[in-house]
Length: 431
Image 1 (cartoon, rainbow, N blue to C red):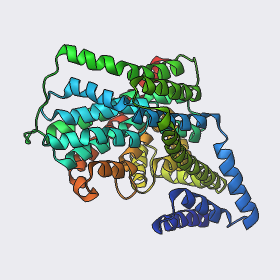
Image 2 (image 1 turned 120 degrees about the horizontal axis):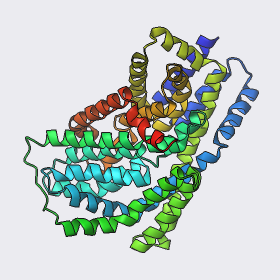
Image 3 (image 1 turned 45 degrees about the horizontal axis):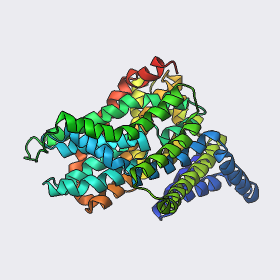
Image 4 (image 1 turned 180 degrees about the horizontal axis):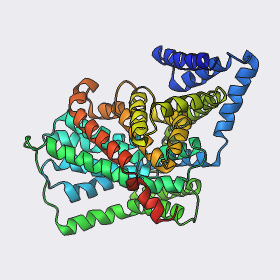
């Protein structure tokens, strides 16, 4: 019966996806069909509905709509522009400097907005045309923008880290946020290094050298935006407020800042709220149906069976982590990040915990792994946004983006093999 349940769950989910059913509905329907093996239709449907509602009944999840709203306000409130100007003042003089500007700006914006899609849209929209005008290949600019935008999902605040905390059964959000800094910086540095290697044989233009006065001027303009990061993380780490309360403070701060910059008016708020509501609805439906599927898998002992299979292959921690990484890399190609985190965390976390892997380290490793999937077809949301903003095609971007894929994979390997890179900051703050 357990094998039949696994077969129905996997086959039905893949079938729904292949015929174009949205991911959220595919998750819910495949869970329902699996439950029908042992339960009549009416109680099965009721159970799925109950589990969807229960899955959303979490105080921590309130942080997600607030951070989404804060990110949307930042996207429209002139914050991205000021961060780009700061990044350009710092790195624009280097050969191929706009590549470094793109990566650094994406890291800064991601550290504030916590959204890869928002970063790809905001940074790509501002820098894309400028890079093309200055002689950079359009596809190269798109490749840099797409991959660097994912750093915002690792560098806190990050909605996906909150989702992982929920799926893992309560891993500290503060610890996850602190753990994301060094891996996020590592990914950014690897992307910059890749860009440097790629442009050695290309005579790409350099920007004008910025004087110290100009650097300080740009830094001064960006300080109010950067202070948001200090307020949010300082409050969480200092125990002044929770991550959920921090998300509400982020909205208020971003709103005031956008009005001060005079790039957001009361007339624009309706569009901002509507866009944020749409994004929140999609994310919450994914969470609800993913939680129902996770419950079905647990009731059918699917995670326990998969754990037994993995542990039977090897008792070596590194071997198991490599296998899990390969599985997640494959999953990330076909599944969006939020459902992947909710479905596979209950499956793989017990395995790695039995081998002595810290759940905070595994969470960062998992998120970084799935970030690569956001840049790959056929369902990579950041890939589609980046290509659309650059006004090019996926086929043309695939070749220049491959070296950046490799850079992200190398960063993933380093993070996997050296957990101290992830755990040093949380331990430093005693979390």
